Length: 101
Length: 227
Image (cartoon, rainbow over all chains, first blue to last red; front, side, top):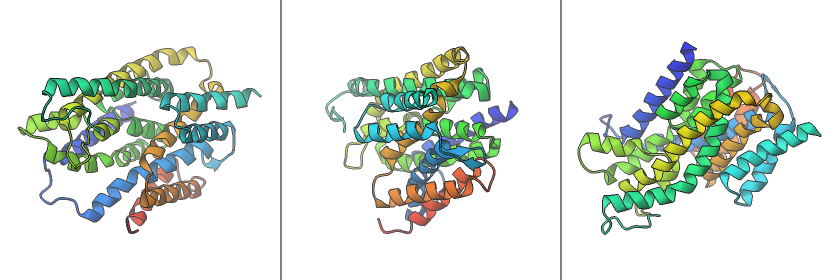
């Protein structure tokens, strides 16, 4: 349980630090253009990794189960510009239905 | 896209316009936060998820850290995943900085209200931002995020088996929504494709959490591409 609180404190401090660094001009030298590009690309790389691991990961192995159908629904709903709540709740509903059948 | 020009409207009017713009975001955020509360309670207990939403206030970092813990990853890996997912705030803060006036304390207060949808909504399109408008857009999202987490923690135990309801599919669906908004343009798509490939390849090989962190390598490689 201590680990949970450490995690929460660290994430709160790190998030605040990253939000404030620019406006308070912390750090003597500004980030290089190259470093800024990496920062901008990090979210895409990690989010894509989370999508595939949370869809196909089962501990240390990869599986194809009902979650993939839910994510397929989410992909179609996204391209149809459905609202966020519909996409996310729909993905869960499709996955639940697939498990019932 | 600011609806009220900052030169004309008072801070109060701009903040109000922002709140109106933020209400639909707040409703979506509420639904996401309910699922966060439901999924986080078995892993973190009842109080910690709510405290986390109050002090971290970041869907991607909170879900990312929870996903790592849920898969059996270490606390350190969960922290690292959350920090890397939020590294974009560094870039957003640098863009915002010239638009903030006043003392350090007031600049900090404005900067702390930065979240993705508010930051994007408050952009005037010419490199400047309407800070009061951004504060307004963030208010309904903060309320929705904290209230939703509380509701999720409270209703979670009533759900006998969350997986029968497909709640485990909420994680990837949520990240997919964020990815669609984020991965625009060739370099970001390359980073996303590379990150997914690295994570899939490493999942059978290394402990939980590390495949997500290793995906950061794709961002470094993609940064060498021409924009």
